[in-house]
Length: 355
Length: 205
Image (cartoon, rainbow over all chains, first blue to last red):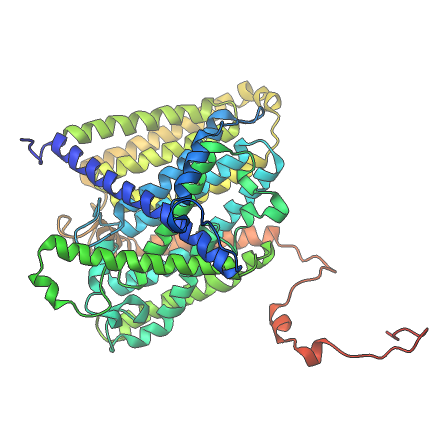
């Protein structure tokens, strides 16, 4: 029998947890990707993928095999090490961020005190994969794409940071599990509605717009349409991805989608109660712990799917922004608004009713 | 402790090696990438010491923002390396003096911190280190004992920011700018008019 408290036991447990989360994300990504394409097709009155498997459900697996079996082409003038490193960084960061995501009561790989800062740090590192890929390709379009993306992601991180600060002020904690636990007891306790029933409802005047700003900034941060300027096909062919093919391209794409789902999870955790059900759940106390956790996990997953659906709809409906409009929105609209919101929420915490 | 030891030696070795690589790499972009690796493993060392808040702030500020702009600038530079190397022997003494002063300063700071702790002269409410989180402990020191230094640092940064804006801001004449307010206020009545043009006359405008 292994001693679970020993270094060996700890390593086995942690690796097992990491593997479980990784497999869950990869499998969900395969179907979410399919759903993304189906929603997109539906808005355009097309059928979308419908050949591989029932309703085309296995399309993503077919694509996966196609990418893996293709030849890896590395351009002659490319900086080979950085060229290969870039998609690996994108992929690793996209999944590394999930380490602190609270999936259900007690279900989190690393329950660290500064969880939300960790997520913010990892998502701000995401720009390196893109900027390195664009530079290492040694080609004009990828380089222009990566420069655009660096400016874009740095700009929108600022407003995301301020929105996160408003949530931290409401919850009084940097720990994601604590932030979720504070929103227990029904949808009226969710941070988007002020985070404390009727008494805190006036804070919703600020928190609801903050949620919208977070959603839009998340679109920009993950280079999703309408902010997919780094890969705008009408101007830059495919931006930083032009020279990539086969598995490196696949790694970029999976990393990007992992980041998108992460942003859906983050908006759920910060504003919509994470794994909390939208109604009081006193009956859970009688359930076995695993069943209660699974109940929470289902809510969390459902909320992620809902926000992913919104991401897909935005992609299908909204036309792409122009670059100066993007910068104007980030610096002249979101930054001052979220800054005022931080002041307003701080004042609310000091002068408003006690939480 | 065994795992901590492995992590420490791994991170420390990465920090030192990538620090050396920063100054030896021939390509400046590689230098910046090694610098980022050094920052990142230094953040890992902070986590090992229990300073998780500092570690995350290091990654967010230095790796996530400052180094991105470094990389941004360095990638667009077109540096002539032979010209750069020519002044090496001439500037070596000055560089050595600066490095020596910095080393002596760091030894003094490290010695005083090791002897009496960072908040030795603190008069404010002492935080019980075991019961509060990192962020709380730092906040208590920063906003009580060091509040004037903190505010001064903020002012210095503000002045630097305003200076950078003043230096680079240019208002070019004759550029068509988008006025979003005016654009969305436009409607059919103000944005369009129907003219019936007589043949061979055109519009008088």
